Image 1: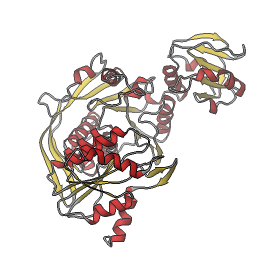
Image 2: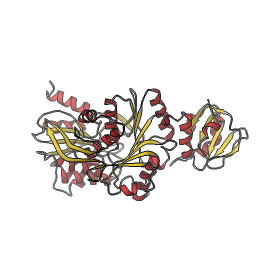
Image 3: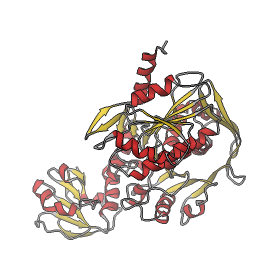
Image 4: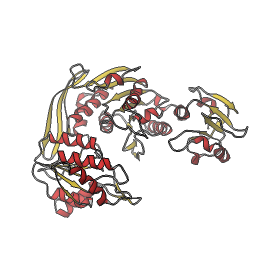
Length: 490
């Protein structure tokens, strides 16, 4: 049980009626989870306004309501008014879970690209250094041995604080998390201070009716992280770094290829051997050493250099960093799957034109014999994405294998036909194979020496959604089955 008055310590509020010295059984923002003596926070969502459930939750036993608008309930219910209930929820949740972030060292990473890979790299390095690290991100939350699939890149503030508490109880020293612009805008990371905040890069993305109204708003939301952290580590090479640091309240450290960066990468070399791709470079500035990572491309230098900058701040030895980065990998993010020493096969989550273009452009730098791109597009989504992805693959890949992704309630062939419309704007060669396993079989069995083959779009997903139902489908499993059926396994 928690005392209401204690939960409100860091909030500006007005007591409209009731008693602040009572105790609550739980803190709830979902009306379906209300129990006797719960405190219910009337959060306004995109589709649902919690204020509309005020009477219903009181009938279920809620004894305290936190509101930003007037509600009509009985005189025996405590009603507390705040300016913004979503912001209030973050502070209430932090207090409800006894401020776990005051003990954990919390590392927050924001940016358009690189967040997921960097969080896993940091986790790998810190654990190699002997620390226990929890993770919150796009793919999952990891707390000890528990892995919880993610719904949002940055969960609701209550869930963030709940995870922090579980991490602390599990003996974690650090929490590393992805911080989305939506998470910042919607107060999901209010109520605590990040030990370190990181900015990777920013490009026009997440702009639309249900996300950000403009690039300027998107950028401004990203910049909020640097008013919520003690140390800001930022990419000196990004054109918008000054705007990101506008109104910052933290100390600042920089990384990048720039000569002025505090931690610099030089002498970058592409690495290709035995079906594997990677990149190597020299680090100078605040520390010196040579790094090689098993993730290809220039952006992998940025991701790993970000991780190096973070872990250097915590005094991790360069040799520990080198070892961890050489073996670091992230499920579904340029994930190399070794099937042959003659050609390279990888899985990547690239599921829009921008990410696919970035991926294929990166891989072309390795001068493959052929660049083969296998992908499909999701059903019940914008046709424009299909046209654009088809055009990108047609321009950059030597061969495109068009297949099925998550058709949802559309016919797979109709989606493929839309992708072909985009490829038709190019001279790119393509074939179409609806069944994804058969498409993968074709890609592997027709692999040629020097090829780089990309299975794009599914990444970490382990299902295929058809007619409202999710069916198990993990590309790693499909690859293993194909190899066994081809007689390629030992």
